[in-house]
Structure formats: C-alpha cells, structure tokens
Length: 389
Ligand code: HEC
Ligand code: HEC
Picture 1 (cartoon, rainbow, N blue to C red):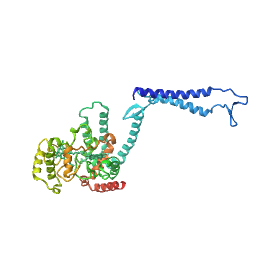
Picture 2: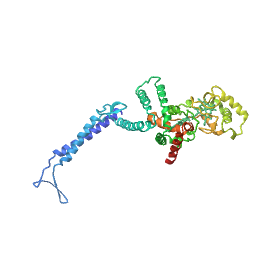
Picture 3: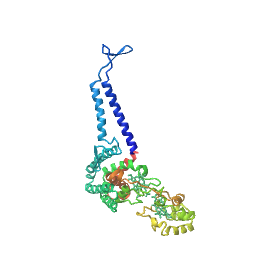
Picture 4: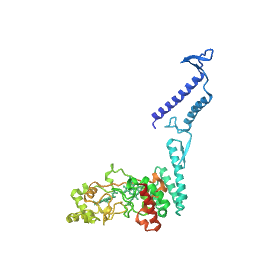
C-alpha cells in the first residue's frame, strides 16, 4: 500500500472515531433549560419532551465499541498500514507473522490443510499400507519450505526436490490399488483437472487422453508425479516468447512447400496412412527434411516415435494430441503448438498430488495389469465419475 492511501485511511478512521466520541460526550454534558414540570417545553402533536439521561447499558456498549475500535488499531495493522504492522500475530508456515487479513487467510488455509493431511495419513496412507510415505513427505515439505524462503536457492535444490518427489512413486503405486484413495483422487480430478482433460479423463484437442497407454511425458508413477508437481511447458509466456514454443513454428524455415512435403512424410509414418493417397515424391522430400539433424528428429527422434526428454509425441501411431488430418498437421507445422500443463505443487500440495497421481495411474491399462484389485478399483472410480456428471 502506498504512503498516500495508508495516510488517507488513517486520517479518515481517526476523524470518524473522534467525531463519534465527540458527539457522545457533547450529548452527555449538554443540559438544556427545563420547565418546572421537568420537560424541555417542546410539544409536538400533544407529546411533551422530557430530558432523561441516556440508558446506562447503551452507554456502556457505545463507549465499549469506541475503546474496542482504538484497541483494534494497536492489534491490527489499521493505522498507517504501510508501516505499522500491529502487535498481534498469526502463525504461517511455521513463522510468526503480523495479523494482516492475508496472513489470517493463509493461517486458516494451513489449519484446514492440516485436517486434510492428518486424515490422509490416518485413513488413506495407513490403510493402503503406505505409512512410510510420511517421512518422505516431511522431508519434501522441508525442502520446499527452504526453496520458498530463500531468495537465491541453492542451484541443485530443485533437482533434489524432483528426486524426493520421485521417491513417492512406490506409495502412489500402492494407493492406485486402494479404492478409498481412488475415490478421493477422482473427486480431486473432477474439481481441478476435468476442465481440461474432461470428466472421463479422455482429453480433447490439445489436452491429452490420460486413460490410454500413450504418454507424452511418461506414464509411470514417477513421471506423473513430476508432471503434476512442476507442470509441463508451464513457466514460459509463449505469446511474448514465440521462439520458445515446445513445438516450434516452421513456416519460415521450411516454407509452404517444405511444410506440405513434411506433412506428407508424417502421414506416411502415422497410423492413419491408409486414409490418404500419398504423393510419394513429396513423402521422399519430406523424409529428407524430417531427418535433417536440426529438424524434426531432434525432438521426435530418428524413428518419429517421440521422446520423453523433449515432450514430443509419437507420430507413428493413430493417437493425436492436436489432430492427424492433413490440414491439421500442416497447421501444426506452420504455427507450432504449445500445450501447457499447469503446475499444481503450490495449489494443491504434495498429499493431494499423490492422490491425483494414483488416480491417473489407475486409469491407464499399464496400471490395471499390475494387480486384479486395480481393475475393480478403476471400474468403481470410473463409474463414479460418470455418475457425478
Ligand atoms: C489448463 C488446462 C489443464 C488443467 C487444468 C490440467 N491439465 Fe494436465 N495437461 C494439460 C495439457 C495441455 C497437457 C499436455 C502438455 C503437453 O502438451 O506437453 C497436460 C498433460 C498432463 C499429463 C501428461 C500426459 C502425458 O501424456 O504425459 C498428465 C498426467 C496430466 N496432464 C494430469 C493432470 C491432472 C491430474 C490435472 C489436475 C490436477 C491436470 N492435468 C490439470 C492441461 C491441463
Ligand atoms: C524442439 C522440439 C521439436 C521439434 C524440433 C519438432 N517438434 Fe513436433 N512437437 C514437439 C512437441 C513438444 C510437441 C507437442 C506439442 C504440445 O505439447 O502441444 C510436438 C507436436 C508435433 C505434432 C502434433 C502431434 C499430435 O499428436 O497432434 C506434429 C505433427 C509434429 N510435432 C511434427 C513435427 C515435425 C514434422 C517436425 C519437423 C519439421 C517437428 N515436429 C519438430 C517438439 C518438437
């Protein structure tokens, strides 16, 4: 808050407070001249006005409020809020901080979250035989706290945090066969993820299907955990920095002819090659461009099957993130693509992410082959998802 607004609030509050106090004191002291019968001599419609003292209880409440108001200035950052933080405090993130409305909210959120975490430990982790996860979670929370607090975090802290996150993978695997955990996970999914991935998690154009076995960023519990914690392509503003597009735009490098040729080649290696009459000359030209070391192979790999490290999808199947028709592929190549998966660590916290990762893992076939219990759990949670919608 600027000094001006801070002073504005201060002056207004004090004037209002002093004004009310002044009026009250004036009324208490003011003694009008009275007639012999004790009235003021004013009559309206035959009603004569007495001068009786204000009721005691009323005065007590009124003065009480005025004192309460002044006390508030001392406890709460109300007078010169830009500089004076008040003497009352709340606990946020293990630290004692001034009682501002923002800190009060954070502190309440933390308390609520504690209820959730306790419940998570007692009713979900313990029942799924995964109580050991609490140690890893505590270490992870400590590292995240250090990261939040340090202005210049140690260079390798982020990598260490990612490693700690992946240590949660075996517990996520356990949770993915626990109906209890999946029920909570599916609810969290509907609240946070369904807007983009759909309530059945089958995705939409630009939003991957999470129920199949085709993964852009990996379908093992550790991959899913990292996708949820950090997001994917999440920290760059592509509208300001088009060079950084995860799938770059090629219209300048390749030209329209080049784009048409490469599209023909992509169709020829894809699962829907039989849907089109392909021009073999263009396919051959496209293959040369595709395989130039600084072009497509750089991210999609020599065989076009995609790579985890670059997040470039497999182009040889019939599963498409953006669409597999000739026109859509040409557009993908002309303008580039930037699917952004937001980060959830700061929004949902480590415990909820574990539940979500377990739910997502349970949706794909690679999880259901692990145990039979998985199959039933998956079936139960999917039917619940459908019913809710
Ligand atoms: C704002 C839209 C949006 C929301 C909300 C969202 N996602 Fe995503 N998600 C995406 C996009 C876009 C991608 C693909 C990123 C890419 O193209 O590389 C993605 C990718 C993923 C992947 C990786 C898929 C793969 O094939 O590797 C997982 C897993 C995932 N999301 C799970 C979730 C979960 C769980 C939630 C809820 C906590 C969620 N997402 C919420 C947009 C969203
Ligand atoms: C810098 C790495 C990179 C390079 C180089 C690159 N791609 Fe991509 N490509 C990606 C990524 C990442 C995506 C996924 C985009 C997203 O997540 O939204 C993608 C997506 C695509 C898609 C959409 C797939 C779908 O399922 O809808 C096609 C088609 C494609 N690339 C073809 C190409 C071709 C052809 C070239 C060479 C001209 C190329 N890419 C070069 C990274 C790259």
